[in-house]
Amino acid sequence: MKPVEFCEPGKYYPDPENCNAYYRCLLGELVKQYCLGGLHWNPETNVCDWPESAKCDKETFIQPDPSTTMSTPDSNEWGVSSTTETDDWWLTTTTRRPEEWWTNSPQTTERPMWTTEAVRPPMTTVRSYN
Image 1 (cartoon, rainbow, N blue to C red):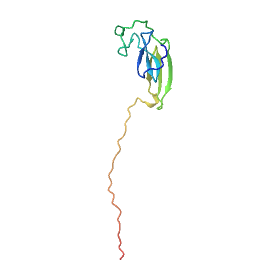
Image 2: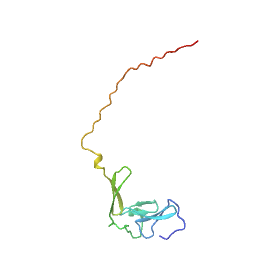
Image 3: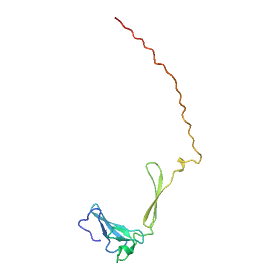
Image 4: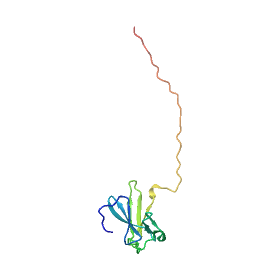
């Protein structure tokens, strides 16, 4: 798409060459996005839609390259590791529990025992000097 001098934030624009793609205006810049496989951008409703409803007469290209697969181990502030895998062009996140935090045996906790004890206040003597 040709660069525009100004785009309205939050507004959508159809891709002039690809029924599967559209542009979204973010912070004054057009960002190209894609509909999920088989869907076309519908400029009347601003959603990815069935081709019959979108009525796009351009060719459809599914982008980006679906042969890209990436796996990246990562950990967050709690020390839980997660692996992010991208298959085709959508994102999948899997978080696995650390084995050292879990046990297979049931855990029991004893209840605290409460006791009551009577305590006498200390005796005080008041002297008066006249």
